[in-house]
Image (cartoon, rainbow, N blue to C red; front, side, top):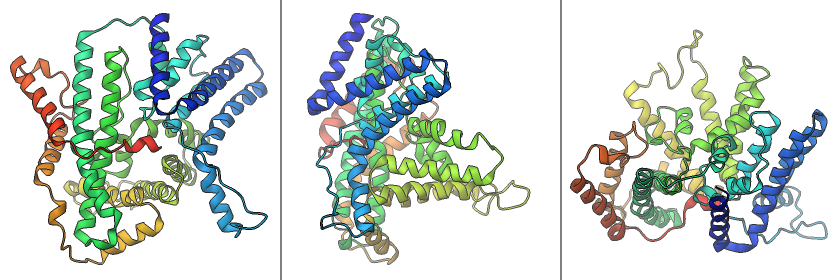
Length: 450
């Protein structure tokens, strides 16, 4: 077991170092801070000292995150607010590269010390295992964000190769590659073309590109999650499910229960519930907690007003849909409302797609341009070059496959139990052929920037 973890740690650091070896020092430092902070919390019975160790850990993690991800944004906004862009009082920004995966592993290590302080878990004394937990390469750069209680114990036992789990992992990787390379990258080609100059496109073209962006980011991120989970299975690990067909959500609340599940769970556990637990019946406290939580989720995605407004808008929508329309509290905008039941998923998808414009636009000015072009009902004369019937067929295959197998983790799971071997291999080779033949122009994973 020790040898397995040592090899895995070296492999994980090598994998991360291929991007930029200098930031290996940062991930090691974050790991050591939280490892020793947790031991110090456990080693003292005095609550004041425990809080000092906990707050020191949180300060380190949030400080690193702020420095690399948010410092320049807040400095620019502060300077603009007080007209201090030039002169002797001007603040200078830092020329820093955002370390890939910083938001993911920072939240993962920070939750560990919080859980130790809350006595939800006991701290590990095995430094090697903890370093592996923080840097586990399949989910290091874009999640899923794992809690120590579920992932850390998996490093404490010897792992043996399981051919069935490995086959299942390879099938999930294959499905993830299809979603990323055939769906997301082809959608990105259209979305990038339209959003590069939205003023040149009509209402239908921009609306079409905005809908495609939703499927682009879904195929991109859920595809990565499938690849990460499948790779982990090959090595004998089980990672958390991160997506559950979010385009079937019947409300914004349900959407966030289906989209980036581990991030939503993290903010629920460490932001939302701590705020409301003192007064569960307070509507004001609950609404404040919802608004703050979703605002922070937006900010987590990036240092820009588009992300902040995106998160705040999501929070506002959740508050509205949870607000009863009648005194008996049995009716809301999504439940027993004037909207026909069969149209609720369409209504929800429309709202989510509209809010994704904030997510895709480079700045607030571009959001204004896009919305103005959509609601001006400007005729779209150049729609034809954007339409690709073959791609739309592949998109239909993805959606139909996931809907028909929605009770399973992914469409190809346990296919060997239902389909004979020759047919299975025909299906595998079809997907491999589609990936090599119809992959879109190469695009980086979107969530690497977060």
